[in-house]
Image (tube, rainbow over all chains, first blue to last red; front, side, top):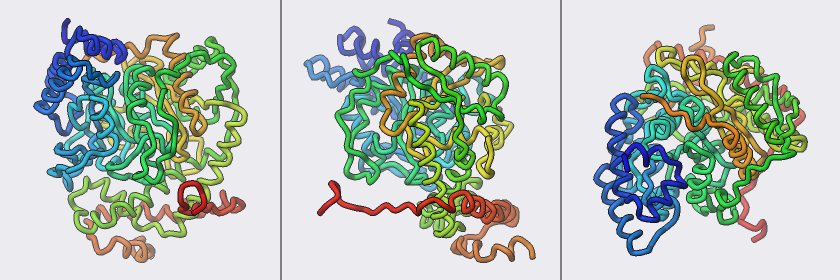
Amino acid sequence: MADGDVLAMNLTDLSWLIASKKVSASEVVSAALARLDQFEPQLNAFITVDRDGALAQAKRADEEITRGAYRGPLHGVPVSIKDLFETAGMRTTGGSKIFADWIPEHDSALAEKLKAAGAINLGKTNLDEFGHGGTSTLSHFGPVHNPWNVERIAGGSSGGSAAAVAAGIGPLSYGTETGSSVRRPASYCGVVGFKPTFGIISRTGSFRGAWSQDHAGLFARSVKDICLGLDVVAGFDRRDPASVPQETPQYAARLDSNIKGLKIGVLRNFLESVTPNVKTAFEAALKVFASAGAELVDFDVPELRYAAMTSNFTSSAESGGINRIWFRQHAHDYVPHVARGIAVGLTISASEYLTAQRARQRIREAVRAAYDKVAIIATPTTSRIAPLLSEGLKGNGDDARHVSTNHSNMLRFPSMLGLPGCSLPIGISPENMPMGVQLVGKWFTDQTVLNAAAAYQNETDWHTKRPKI
Amino acid sequence: MDLKEKHAHRLAMLQGVEFSPADIDEILAEVDDIERVVAELEEFCKNTPWFSQQTQPEGGKV
């Protein structure tokens, strides 16, 4: 079987081939590494690649499978992990010069679970320093480039993970999100990005960006693959104060694309800053949901005009607190823009932070009430296609400093409130760049969000489109 | 009053870390916005109960 064939497969098919020994984990991992070698010089998606380690793990996986010790759908499958998660014996930098040579002794909870599932970690993906950014250009290790057009950004902060999956360097990559760092790069790179309800995936052993908004999430090319990848890493972890007790994850087994009667809310007031092509793709996506049986409900949540501002203020203050000690010792080793942001966070007083939390409470209650009317809120994931690198940090078009109907509010509220959110591809722009829709559910309705996303993918083929790098 | 003077109390929270004049200008531009943002958030949430979240043992009771 040709290398490209195995890397083009969905995870379900690839797992079956590995489990039935029609293809070996060693062959799949070798193919992924060859693809990485081919495209990494243009993408800069990885900070560290563990070539020898990955091949050794693959050999071990093949031996286990041969003797009947199959561990499940991720056994022998190449994955990658955002370089915010600690990996025992493998460099973990946070995208920062400060940790450029740090080799942790212990695995993060996420890396532990992936190892236990037999997944093969190819390496650590590039990001904005400590997750502080939305472009993946604020890395000590240089910017990530978008596989659809290397002159454009991949989005951040989990841009390396999104770019890796879009480029076919493994079917799964794991990232994190504090503001929109899974959903935005997923949309810009034309892959599926899912961030579950706060507390579903443990964050133990990962760098904090803002503790009350940090989530782990993942990228894949299909919703089914997201479910398989989520099943392995979800679960209660006493070491993470945000972790929630939960049933044994069975997202893949429970995937049901019947969405007849599902109420999907549309917040049209927040479409103002969305570009015409993205708006058109979004309206077309809504029609697909309607034809699959969903009921579309136009409504408004006026309090969401304060969401981006409140989220930004919260994460700024929390990042100041988190970085206080490192900052005192290493302020000039940070990426300059990140250092300035942390400096601003350090100047926010406790009473000002608490005011933002009170505002957050008001938004939370308004959104809770909104979910009495609808099961899911749908919006374009991003207001525009991935901007050019030359547009700089303002290229995303965000406004997180004013009360407004700017689309940034749509990007920021799911993480600020801990809601499950999924971005999936819904079209290709005239510039040949992907566009995305995001589905945001009520707390702990992760399965409903995934089901709706799967229903869309059953009816469309946008998720099968691949960039020509 | 220039921004540096106006926000001297905030810059003191930078724990002695020094920045270039250009960096300080960028930081001050954002810092100058904090009080406006807080005033807008205060107005927005003035009738919202203060949130409270204690750290309690699992299950609620010791």
